[in-house]
Length: 217
Image 1 (cartoon, rainbow, N blue to C red):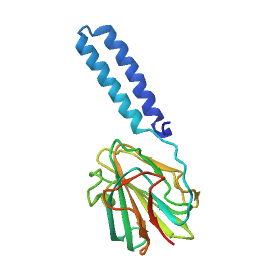
Image 2: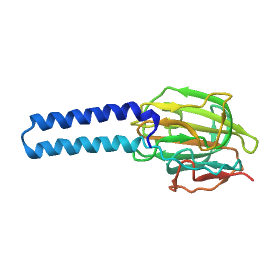
Image 3: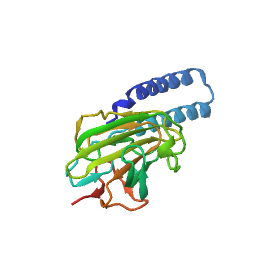
Image 4: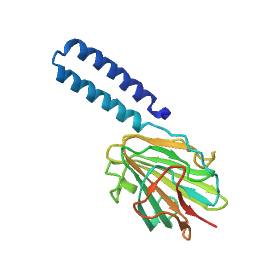
């Protein structure tokens, strides 16, 4: 199954592939050149299709758990000062997505969206320390009775040119459901209350909607 944000690109790519196959078959006489063009075109379409895949995942709802909002690798676990919304110290957990990861963003917990803001910016590589504050990004804060306010930030990477964010203020959201999409390489930061038990380690593989990032008893 593919994400709706990729429908236009998939349609255009498929149309171009068919056109290339028909034109090369008609006008290219060199056998190896013909096959090379066809294979490269097919590989390009496969890359597009795998990038916009949207696997269905059942989520065991639990208000005591923060689940990973995306697929990727845990690259940051540290106490930091969050300057945009909280203006105090929080536990930051960041998950980096390579171009081959699923790029759907899912709500890390159920609750009410109390803040949602888009920031235009640069396109530094997503693991750059300044990407959290200088890159194109969205900041979303969800509140529930267990954790209080939890912030997640979608951050564009060097290849990402568009962030899709479905979260609107006052929305009631459900843990693990579709919160948005980041096109072509990115990262998501979570900012959790101090004292939250972290359940992942650096360089661990995280699965969006499945991996438990943190727990609060």
